[in-house]
Amino acid sequence: MPCFNTIRAGGRLFLSAGLGLFLVTGSALADEKTPPPTEGQLKTNDPFEAINRVTSGFNSVVRGMVIDPIVDGYQAVAPKPVQKAVSNAVSNLSEPVTAVSSLLQWDTENAGMATKRFFVNTTVGVGGLSDPATEMGYEKRDEDLGQALGAGGMAPGPHIVLPIIGPSNMRDLTGDVLTALSNPLPLAAKAASGGIGYSNNQDDIKALTSGALDPYVVERDSYEQNRSYDINNGVVPLTDLPQFVEEEEAKPAAK
Image 1 (cartoon, one colour):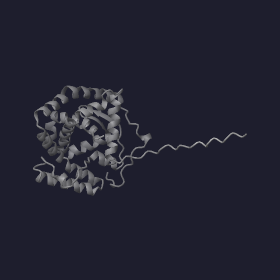
Image 2 (cartoon, helix red, strand yellow):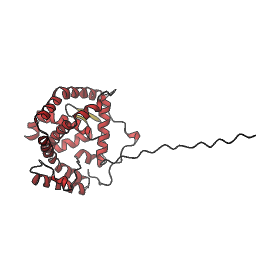
Image 3 (cartoon, helix red, strand yellow):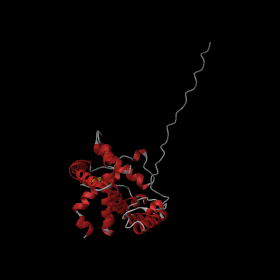
Image 4 (cartoon, helix red, strand yellow):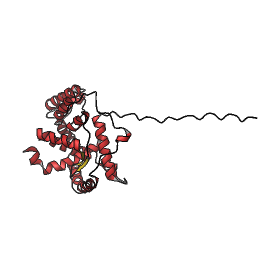
């Protein structure tokens, strides 16, 4: 599931390159998360499907003609240690957003963890180029404002496919806008992080829709289910198993 964030955020890297100058110049209890969707609730709210399909097709062309060549060039030029260092540094910039989003959910444990990670990696890790916090036992669990809104009970709203950026919904778009208004740097970091994630999982992402009868539906449903998974911190509901009634053993025929 996490690979689908990279489809959406991978587009953000390209978008941030075009809007770089622009980017740079509800609480809820942590233990009262929104219940995971039931089977009947998994039907995606998609009133804009017609235009979403057009935008999704456009994004697919842009990925193939622009983003993939850029990613391939980056992988060919940058050594693996450099790629890892860049990935660590960009990931480190997301920790403040995780801390704030966790606090909005009264998840003080994860907020404290993100704060410690940011302090350790920024200092000992030399600006986040390395990740000593993980080695010290400070585990990373990303949170964003979209997740905080979802945990607070806000419905995802209509599914939206944004040009270049990719799949989203009204709730997540609202969270991203609020993040950009408060501080554009974390959103730019999220864009870069998405690009790096796309670089690391390029083949898996392509395989997700390769050969699908309807790639749009695969992308849409994967995105929405992945966000539900994120909001519930990976808690997957157990579906009710069907009840099987054993047939009574056939009685011996009367003589």
